[in-house]
Amino acid sequence: MCRVTPRDSQDKISELLLHVAVRTHVADSRVDLHRLHTVLYFSDRACLRAHGSTITDGEYARWPEGPVLRSMRYAIKEMENRGDAQVVGDPDQGQWLIALREPGLLGHLSDDELAVVDDVVSELTYLPDRQLMMLIEDDAGWAAAEDGEPILMEMAFITRPEVTDKVRERAEQLARQQG
Image 1: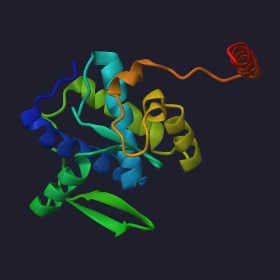
Image 2: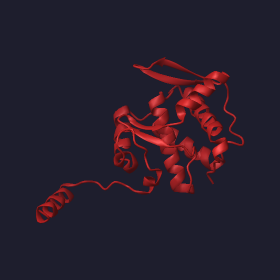
Image 3: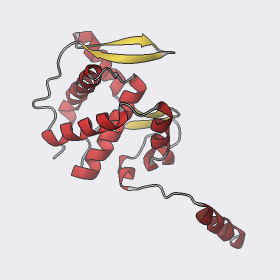
Image 4: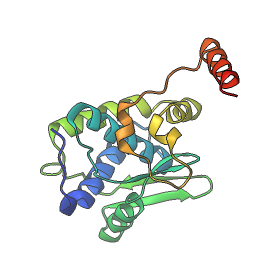
C-alpha cells in the first residue's frame, strides 16, 4: 500500500528522485528535469489508482510543457546542499539530476510504491518527446487545469473520451438544438 505522512514527504521525494536518477543513469538514459516531473506525476497517478494514495503527497501544477511537482525544486536544492545530488546542464538546453549517492529507499518507499515507480520509469524513459507530450495532453487532470493552476489528482480516475467524427457531429447537433 502507498503511504506518506507530511513529515517525511520531503525525504521521500528526495529518495524517489535519487532512485529515478540512479535507475535512468545506469540505463544510459538520464531523464531531464522536465521528464522527471512527468515520471513522478504518472507514478503518483498510478499509485493513487492502484492503492488509493499518492507516493509523494505533493501538489502538481499544470505548465505548458507538462505537470510540475511544486515541491521538487525545494527537494533538489536540499539534496544539492547536502551533497546528495547535482543538477547539470543548461536551463535553456536541458538539465539533469545526477545522484551523488545511492538512494536510501528503506523506510521511505514501500515495495508497492517502488514497483509503480519502476513501471512508470520503464514506460516513459525511452518514449520520444512528442509521444510523451501526447500522453500528457491526454491526461484528464492536466487537460482540466489552466496553466499555473493545481492539477486535481482525483482526475486520475477519469479517462478522456476519444473525440471521433461521430462524437463531434453529435456535439454540434446538440449545440444547434440548444441555440
